Image (cartoon, rainbow over all chains, first blue to last red; front, side, top):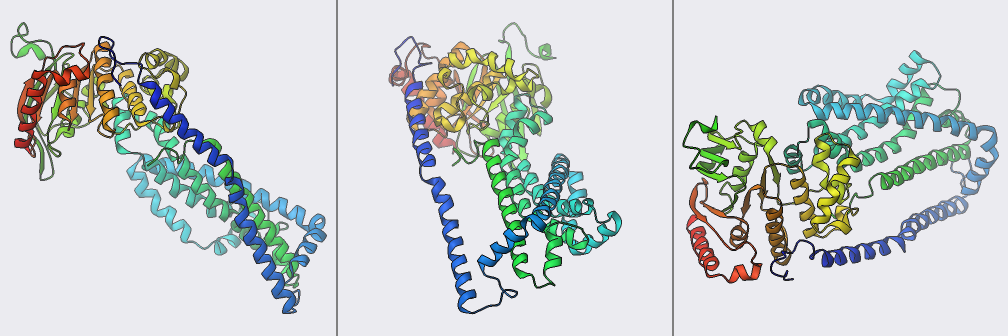
Length: 287
Length: 262
């Protein structure tokens, strides 16, 4: 590359760079489009089928009785039999508790994270309390909240929020604080105020870790909801569980747990999808 | 404030003036007794062995840091906040925002200065085209090569509209072909958009190509060991420059000085 004398090479060097970049992009896109969807779905499906096969084999060969350990057919039979009578409304109730509790957890976590991030004093004041809040057993809080708020939805929301907000806060605070210090310096010399740095640099770079926190929290949400219902409730999957277990209605218990699991997975996958939409740049071009 | 010392008629208008500047981090003395002056629109290159306090010096000039001793003046500004308002700093790594395309990254400083996103983008469009990035305006950083990213990073620095550009090994992370390319690109860019620049580098050729003055610093504590003025024909190509007898002599001299300094 030798620019002609007199016209110093401002424009010309663009083209080889361009080709390189676009070729790399095409290769990556092709790899992503083709087999990767199957590669992600197939292994868990195979594992699932294997587990189901072993399960049924043990139940049938060992002549295990249904109330001790039901076969898969019976779990599904119970699921369909009880769907319209019990499980549909229970799932809906628990789903709402999970979702609203999760939303409250996000709102609380965002506010707390920004506070902790923006001031060292607030960090010192709040962080130990947050950690302490996780040591309090939910089994203990549940009944107390039920006494205070009754059998309605509010104690469940609080319990779901308490079990969910912590991983969100920890990941968000880490994400906000992990911006390259040189980039913060660049922002200062580019006339960026603290607020500009927060919203143009720190918040967007924290998005991927924010979503990591959300995904972890999504797993805790159904556990929180069930605990909340254990403490006192009139409907919900947790409520069905306490009813079905002492009646030795084990296939209903399993069907119930299956629904909880599926909700958890759906929430998790939804969040992963949302992350891809919100931060398409994440994990690219970093060495 | 500035005209109290010396006779303004003889001196060219001072861009940057450092007097007996010293800075220590705990027991480590990074720089000590550094005095430098650079006229407005002057190009100063600083070379030296690693750990000679080159980057510390840039931080001090920019106002990101303040010296323990001595005084710093950037276009008449002495306080760190005022210096920060006059300086733009560009580090070795491009540090582009991965979620913003080329235009968005280039427009960052304008948005920081309160301009609306759309207005800022359209304002930088012309500059982006002029600097050979026109067909890439909507690409994200991960879609660009290292050399392209560094160009965008330089544009982002330029768009801030600061009188002083502080370049901290801007091409240090690039391969030698891209680096040579970009050195020449920067030389032309600075002819189009004259700014007072201070360039820190390990690379003697880069120092000579991009500075009309070259300062050699000694190892810890960093001091000014030698200072040279360069004057090469402005229109010459890189290869012509590298062949010039004055260029090669000065390069050898600088290399010898660097060996002494480390």
